[in-house]
Length: 140
Length: 64
Image (spheres, one colour):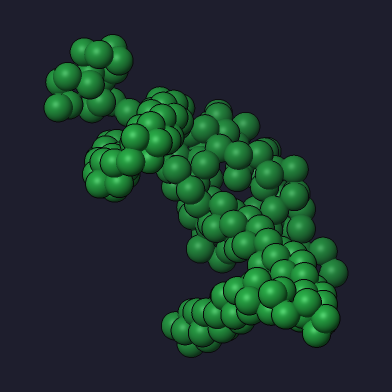
């Protein structure tokens, strides 16, 4: 498999630089998107799953071959900040939409289900965030 | 927080990439550190200080 990929893409997978890894990652995602799109269109639901597992395995192997540092403490800090802002923005927007839909459902009962479908997963996400925060806060 | 990373790096004739490799971080992190845009953790400060054969106190200037 590795030899086939190496000869096809003219790559040496044993000397993987950060740039080369990112290129491979991008190519893999593109190929995966094509496979998933085509398979779902054709009604094959097992193929996308198989392709995703194969892509994950391929990228996992490639990542192991990268000698350079792919992410450091500044990346984790930035990711945490981005996640916090994303969660806040998502929670505010969705709760607002949920409340509006709930209010409108008084006159239009069919809006109650979409409102609940928005609000309950949001509550779940907030609870999950709080639980994970507590766990990592205790772990230090 | 200001620092003397650039001066120490020049003293030992190290590139940002080489220092990043020694400290186990990405080159971009060294760039941000030198520009004073990022405050490192104690662990990273120690790794950089050790890579530049100096101490944290000599490398970083803590402004009040």
